[in-house]
Image (cartoon, rainbow, N blue to C red; front, side):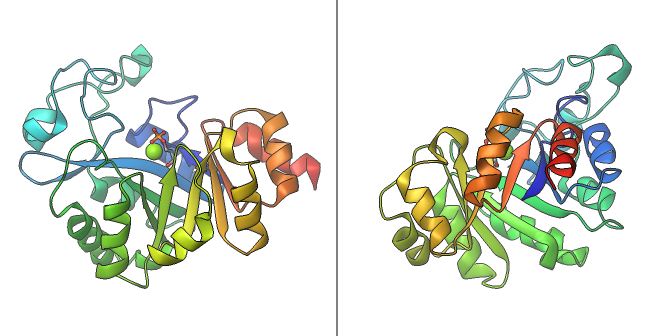
Length: 241
Ligand code: G3P
Ligand code: MG
């Protein structure tokens, strides 16, 4: 079972900041997950929420602010004073952190609330420019975006994200098409997911911070877990080998 650091090493560092990604890049985990939005001036930035309020000292929607405006705020102090001065990273800056590593990179398109026209093209262009296409997984709760990735770049790994599980998920996956299923922890032991695993679907589960759940998922054969606690999960997997 693989380990992806969720929003970087988000238990110990402010989520989706270069500090969280640099710490992840040092770890022998398999991958990293982060979330992207499009700014007013069409730059791809890495942040979880549609608004900057929760994770910065600023206010407003990412979509209503330019990169220069977004950069004026502090994205570290809310987590701890030692992280003061962290700025909102661009996709390019985050990709560069992992340029020299072997980590898989899961870019989650946060277009499920607002429509970000052309976000898929922007992301694919930046990944291609850095020659990292074969190391990425592009996922979204917005399945129209998942489909667009399949149309634009059939060789790139795309993944459909789910909060609730659906019946006949494998048929749905084939129809989209999506190369992987990213499912919510409480649904991971439901019949449709177990069926998908038995039929060979790649299933990754978010967000797993408890060892007891990691153990269950290891036993049912999921491909990977997303966790805020990558070192804790590495330790668990090492001991269970
Ligand atoms: O991509 C897995 C997980 O990150 C999805 O939920 O809200 O943490 O982005 P969220
Ligand atoms: Mg996410």
